Amino acid sequence: MNTAVDRLEARVSDAVGAPVELERPGDPEHGDLATNIALRRAKELGKQPRELAAELAERMAGVEGVESVDIAGPGFLNLRLADSFFVEAAAEVDERYGSGSDGERVQVELVSANPTGPLTVASARNGAYGDAVARLFALAGDNVEREYYYNDSGAQMDRFRASVDAVRRGEAPPEDGYHGAYIEQLAALKGDPVPLMLTEIETSLERFRIHVDNWAKQSQLELRLGEYLPRLDTYEKDGALWAASSKYGDDDDRVLLRSEDRSPTYRAADVVYLADKLDRGFDRAIYVLGADHHGTRNWYAAVARMLGYDPDRVEVLLYQLVHLTRGGEQTKMSKRRGDVVFLDDFIDEVGVDAARWYLVNRGPDQTIEIDVDLAAEKSQKNPVYYVQYAHARIAAILRNAGDAQVGGDPPGPLVGEEKDLIKRLLEFPPTVREAAARRGPQLVPAYAIRLADDYHRFYHECRVLGDDAQAFRLSLCRATQVVIARCLDLVGVEAPERM
RNA sequence: GCCCCCGUAGCUCAGUGGAUAGAGCAGCGGUUUCCUAAACCGCGUGCGCAUGUUCGAUUCAUGCCGGGGGCACCA
Image 1 (cartoon, rainbow, N blue to C red):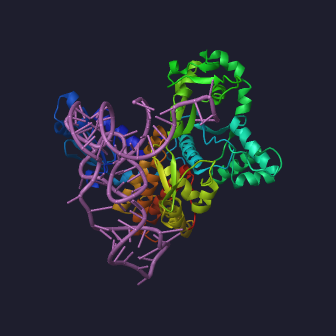
Image 2: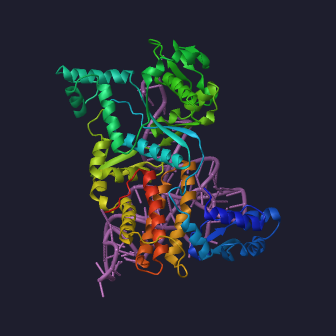
Image 3: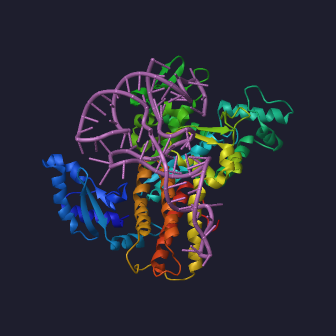
């Protein structure tokens, strides 16, 4: 999408005769937008930065929308912009603001926890992160599908079924089986516990606002192993069949068929699954994996390469683990122990909105530490409510405004709070663009806080209803509301009309 | 031993080359006859250490120190 800043950049670039990028300086004293082009290009042009800056400033001064150009520091060019620029920029914020038209088919495989128990908070991070990335891709104009892959045929599943069966017979689950209250609950129901567990998982995910478009199961993929094994670079060793994946960029070779009974490993199913994904026509297949899987991060692209696919179509996103503390004590996240925190319990305590916000708020490379008690207790002070409150406040004003006119030119010069708010709105498209490119959805909540901040300040300083500038200010409210709602949606948080 | 991630304010963390490094929480003080006070305003000698690259490094490179995770014919 072409924004007012894009168009201004184009005009400035045109006037200067070279591409110029405009950025918002950290200090408002440094103008509305600034560029470091003189510093970047002084050397190659054989000039002093400030001397070059002076030349460029002269050419930029006449550009439409530019009120003044100052040279500052070592050679920064600081632009002050005309009110007409801000008004134009604010007017173009609509539902599609920040969206793109990339048009790629993207698959995000997320969560993919084996259905041997309810989803834990670790899986919740996988889902929250993967889903947020998927939403960013969708905004960028990609066609996104979310998929959940599960193992329904391995040794762990046998142990899981055996555990439920044992309880049904009135016995304790085997030592190496699964324990816990949920096993008892499954035992009370009839039939194979695996689909029962999957239904529960899907229910949890829907509650967590993650919709899985497609479910893939290992047992079905394994059936097609025969088609793909011959296409791989393999060798026999110690009675097992190995993939020579290290020759294709993987860290190690991997066993495909076990020596014991020639049964396929999880990695073997991976091969079929990867080929299946790419054959389904996805331009990009994204795996969202916990940091404990980092040892296999190069495996997927290696398989793609081995099978003759473009390895760039495969992407692995790693995220660090979640540590929950409860009363200062750290709890472990193993499903086999009783002290795990399930997603549903976590949601019960802190709510979906805070849960998703907390899990997306941090960069994927950062280990998240959440004190569950604190998150629940202090939920009123969670930044997510600060942002939601700004949305609800705007909704109230728009309700009170009834069908009053929205939009039009302001009656006088813009005040600082109005300009600051518009400048923030202008940052939205590049922010989501960068968040998508970096697979870093944490930029969105960080931005949303700043936007809410600017709105609350604007609200505090500028009367909307009944003021001469009512129509214009209502348009600022509307624009802000649209962008806040979009930010919250990208994180998977609701945008309330009332609080 | 090898691989990955992290080290920024008392705490939890944003900030992937720019000009005076930010937010929330915690602490102290102020603001409401007015559209939602879940708000606003004020108060802070912080980028683990060292070299290097650069006009410019919290950001990039290398080394070191410290913390976490991983190195299965489990998934």
